[in-house]
Structure formats: structure tokens, C-alpha cells
Image (cartoon, rainbow, N blue to C red; front, side):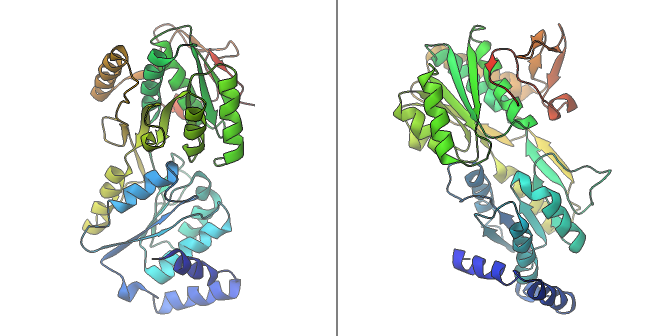
Length: 375
């Protein structure tokens, strides 16, 4: 499917009259379904598929499905978190016969995916994030996500061994719970090496703002940070800017080592191929799809980039030992005694939370040692 063809499909649904006509036609004579393979799945990305980040990680997962016999994969990239994504979902259903759709971006869920769930009750929708709630959301909807905070903790371990200034930098998009967890995990991993290490965070306000990401990275380096990581859709700008300034990099979402091979330490990556294969196996077998799916390193939902050449032997040893502990299950990133950067107690002596805990789902604080604000 070419980008031109995908755009034309969405154009067909731009007016309510065209949408109504397609809806009527699909109800009485399913367009595309007669020509579909035994199963068709659709993937929708908010940015380009080769962004070295969030969208590329999902696209790599989708690509892993393309050799499965009897399965057809349709994709559309650069779809904004607006009514446009509803048009894309409609076209995938009406024109391609998709029976399972993965709208991958955070803002696709409410109201867009939920509106399509109501309009197409026989189609399954699975959204990337932990937002599905059985008490208020339809059963043809669902969520999947990974416990990647542990990956950021491992990033922090390597960063702690590498930093000379004892100042780390974090470029973040928005202060939602998962982003805050990643920031906290990164610093706590570094503080397992040296408790005096600090981390400054700068929020850009959006998932993809290249100019602000470059400005934030430069500002962090200017203030002494010599290891940088991030949580934005595409880390490419952050990686290249930091490396250009002589700072080391810990990656996120996908493997960015080709962008800065001498400065890339490691990275927390998604392994969506494992997750998408699970869903597709159920779809082809006619087994009901799970509505809420989560997993971490031990489950194969998350993986780490290979360690770079700049990582010290001591850093490698602690990285390997910590990873081995995580693979056993039950590893706690947040454990007491621990305060927020505003002085509030978030974990008392002996208290610990694993990433599966609901306390981490609603995280609204930055830990002591993080320079920055959630406001």
C-alpha cells in the first residue's frame, strides 16, 4: 500500500455524505472484505515509520507479521490525534476489511477509538497504553503496554557509571504517569551507582517538537549534563544533538545506536513483535483477544539495546547483574525510604512498589534528585 493510496482512502471519508455512503455500502455489501485475506489487521502511526522512535518500534512489530500465511497487514503513518484517525480506521474497515486495528498513539484512544468501537462492534480495537477499563469501556476495545520503566532504570545504571559531572539530562514530552516513571527510574538507576547524582528534566509540551527537543538538549548540556536520555516520540534529534555536543546517550523506544555509535551507551526498547504475534495468533485461531495486556523484560515485551563500546567494565557488570534480577520478576524500582523532589514521602522504609502496581499507574511526582517540575 502506497502513501498516495492511503491518503486517497482517507479522502473518501472526508465528508459526512461520503462516510454515510460507505457505511451503508459496508452494511449491505462489505467493501473489500470479499477480497481480504483470512485476516486483516491495521496499524496507525502518529508519525513516520522510520522515526528511530515510538512509531518505528510499532512499525517493526507490524513488519514481523507480514510473513504470516493468511494475514494481510495495512498501515498508515503521519495520522494526527484528531478526527483524521477516525477516518483512517473507517477506511481500513470498509475498504480493507480489517477485523483488528491497532491505533498506536496515546491520543487516539478517547474519543476517537472509542467512537469507532461503538460504530463497528464486530471489529476489535487494541490501543497502546494502559487506558482500557472494564467498568466503562466496550469489550471490543482493549489496551496493551510494557513495563519499560525497568529499561530506563538500566539506562540509569549505565549512565551512573559513565557520567563524570554527576549530572544527567532528560528531555520529556508531557508529565503523564509513564513519563514521570521513566524519569524517576532513570535517576534511581543512576543513584544505585552514586547517590549524589542528579537529573534535570525539561518538558517540551508535545510528543514531537524537533526544535524544542534540540533546544532542551543543548540547555541540558550547557548546564553540565554529560549523559542524556528522553521520552519523546522520536529521540533522533535528542541523540544527534547530544552526541554533537560530546554528551553520551541512553536511547528509548528503538535502537538509536546507528545515529551515534561512539556515544550510545544502551537503550530501553519496545519489542512489539512479541505482543502483536500474540494478538494475531488469537485472531487467526478465533480465540477471544485479551482486553488488558501488560508485560516487561521477563515477558519479552521490552528489551535493551546492546551495550556500547563506551560502557566501562564496572558498568557492564552492574548492568548484567541488575538485568538478571529483573528477569526473575518482582524487581522494585520505587522503594523506601524515598521522597519526592518537593519533600513529600512517597515510600517509607521497607515499602516497595513493582511496576505492575497501581501506585505506579497514577504516578504524579518526581523523586528527590530530579531538578524540574511536573507543572
